[in-house]
Length: 130
Image (cartoon, rainbow, N blue to C red; front, side):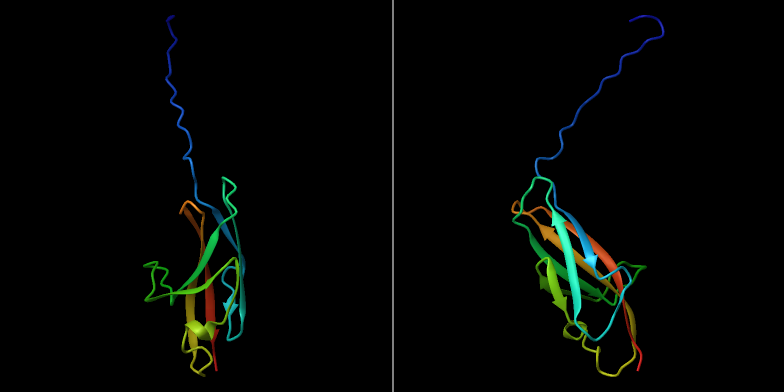
């Protein structure tokens, strides 16, 4: 080596052979207020390796605590990229005349045929004032 020069070693790491799907929730909007009526849940996922045999699972955590990032209830509310969800089917006090105000966490998980899963999540509001 000449004076003032140096050598740098570079290690190239190959990406994993099979990566999880990228997942996005299209509907409802972030912090949408869900009411006592059918709500369309629409999501999309794409697998980096082109796997088109994806399975989808929607879950709802309620009421969701932003501080602890948990909630006492976690329910599977549907399977498939598009689902119609009725809040009263999951949250028993919806539609009863009782006042409610809570944050919900809606998650969509997509799994490819190799078992790799990707997840997207949004917060929703449920407000019922009678």
